Image 1 (cartoon, rainbow, N blue to C red):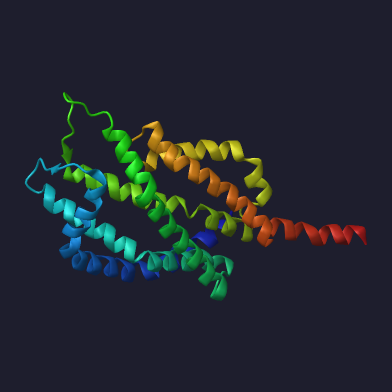
Image 2: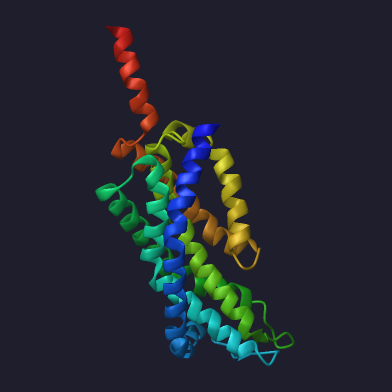
Length: 247
């Protein structure tokens, strides 16, 4: 019990050293992007094809602040990932080139997930949800809720696309073996369904499926990557003992 607590304490200490700088960077960039948030909103609204409305005096201002914050997080994601992986890797000796590759792979998958969402799942999801309009039932969409929907959907896709990297990391440090990932597929499906329900702004089956299916495929790719790269620490730990028994 003492060892996990010690590792967790090292993680928190390393994370705390960088969070202040990261927070300042996000705040400064949010302020800078705020003046471009109107253009960003216009780009996202192109997927909607509907007018936006607001129902409170502060609604448009808060929507632009959220857009600016989303833009800052998106641009600074490599820095966020570096801070996270530096803190996660410190207790397990993941430094240097290993740290670089974890950060690079995570950023690549994050941006791939957001582009996949923006180009494919976001338009499909909006089209499906607005498909229930009729002559007697017209959509009146709040700018605040639209910004929440778009930003959470895109960020959610970016984050879940990073699953294979965290699976590889778990196997490499000996936290979860490849065999355990493969053996617990049924539980993974349940967790994926829960995550899809939580991370998608609307709990309908279509949007859940648009996130859940890619997430399950990423889970399977994580299992394949662990085996192909030979990074399962549990497998390497068993091998010497078998050789010793044979001799």
